[in-house]
Amino acid sequence: MTALFALTTSLLWGLADFGGGLLTRRTPALTVVVVSQAIAAAVLGAIVAATGAWSAAEPRLWFAFAAGLVGPIALLAFYKALALGPMGVVSPLATLSVVVPVGVGLFLGERPGLLQLAGIAVAVGGVVLAGGPQLRGAPVERRTVLLTLVAALGFGTVFALIGEASTTVAGLYLSLFVQRLTNVAVGGAVLAVSLRRGGSALPEGGFPYRSLPALAFVGLADVAANGTYALAAQHGPVTVAAVLASLYPVVTALAARGFLSERLRAVQAAGAGLALVGTVLLATG
Image 1 (cartoon, rainbow, N blue to C red):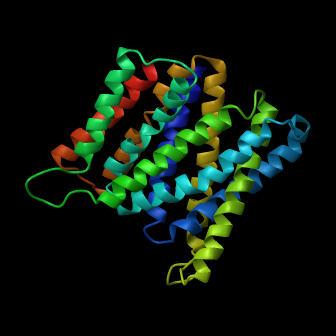
Image 2 (cartoon, rainbow, N blue to C red; image 1 turned 120 degrees about the vertical axis):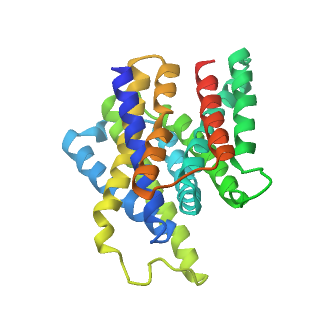
C-alpha cells in the first residue's frame, strides 16, 4: 500500500505541476494559486461535512494552519519558475524540499550518514549545473533557479507541518481543509495588495472561464497528492514513501516533452538528473 500511495502521489504532483506551470503562462500566477486552491477548499469542505470530520478537531490543526501560511508562497514561487521554464530543470530542483526534513533531524540531534552526505553534495552540484554553466547559449535565468529553491524550501516546510497535523483519516481531511482555507486567505490577501499596486489579476481577455476545468484539476490533484503522501507515510516507512513520491519530476518532464516538445541542453539535463539523484540519496540515507 505504501508503494501504491506514494507512486500515486508522484503521478498527481507531476501532473499538477505541469498544469500549474502551463496555466501561469496565460494567467497571473497569484490567480492560478487562489482559484485552484479555492476549488480544492470547496471540495474538501463538502467532504469534511459529509464525513463528520469536524469531530477530529484538535490542537494539532495549528500545524495545518502554519502549512497554509507557507503553502501559497511556495506555490507562487514554483508556478512562476515553471512559467519561466524549462520545466525539466525547475521540477527536479524542487525535489530539494527533502533537505528540510533532514535539517529538522540535524536540529534534533541526528547526524547524517554517508548516503545523506553524498546526497547533499550531489544535489548542490545539480543546482549549479542546472543553472546552465556553459561556453555558449543562454543559461537558465538565475531568477528561475532562485524561485525554484524558495519553492523547495516552502514545500519541505509544508510537508513537515502537514505530517504533524493529523494521525487519522478524518483528521487528514480536516487538516487539508484548514490548510486550503488558509492558502486561499493568504493568497487572496497577497492578490489584493498586488492589485492595489497596479498588478493584474486577469489575462487580457478577462476571467479565463475556459481554464476552470484545468484550474480545478490543478487544485484537486495537489490536495489529493498531499493526502496520498500522508497515507503512504502512515502505511509504511517514511523513507520508502519519500523516495517513491520524489519521482514526480519525471512525470512533469515527460509531460513537458510530450506536450511542449521541450528539449534540455546536456548540462541542464545532467544538473536536473543530479538534483533528483541527490534527493533520492538524502531520502534513503
